[in-house]
Image: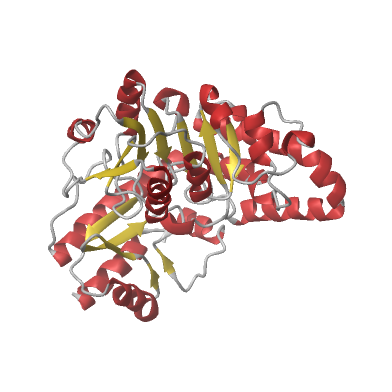
Length: 383
């Protein structure tokens, strides 16, 4: 075992008896970040009234500014929310659409958000169109071309994942945002898997709306996500919950003070985000990501040697980061997932997607070659 890898594995609270290949679902918080999270909880409890009525706004401003620098936007153009589902629901309920307007998306989007859009179609008489992208994928240029062929004179909104959840694919959202900006179409990008995983510069991408989870690949405490909204659209964003807002929140814009305060809740996960950014900065994270991306692609090839299904995309950094999905021929994906956990102590998702079963593995700093080998050996026994 590489001593450096062993040290990083000891920096996490993960059960050492489990081979954890599922960072993509909920992330994993390193000990120094978790301790910072608990420190904020203690500060809150030492003087709850002062903290929640005075200190918290200044501290949230610091955290927003640090996060904004990390993701490439102004800190006053984003707010903290618990998860991407909350972020997208906030935006969906703020859209001013007319009957017959269309939202264009793909058939690779996250299930809970598809349900949210379907709620809108039932209540507002708009169309949510999931453009089909059959597997395997080819290249990003063809993706953009195929997606744009779905745009009509009724398309008002584009909703797209930057990294998909089930299929684990990196989509070329920057190219879509550029074309949408020229066409006057609103862009909403679900980047739940992006911060701390692949490079992100929101200014350069120029979406109207972007949400990214900090508790996944950035490894902040659970329930930590941001919602970015372009300045000229911020006035349109309505809070999911009407609370005290501008009456008690001194923040500079209605976008922040109406959405930032939505009743009493623990802000400690949000305030620990700078510690997560600092943790990665102190641990050569670009090298970590390169190693994990390489391990992902190498493992994908080894899995295909066993299961003999067709790859869903080229084995390249264009499509894959530290997470990959492979089609696997099983009738009961839940049974396989449970077997890998109970019989082999491997935590890994097996996802039912459309009419396929997908095995999705993720590698992060605490993983090493022997974790991949353990998965390969288990699959050899099972297949």
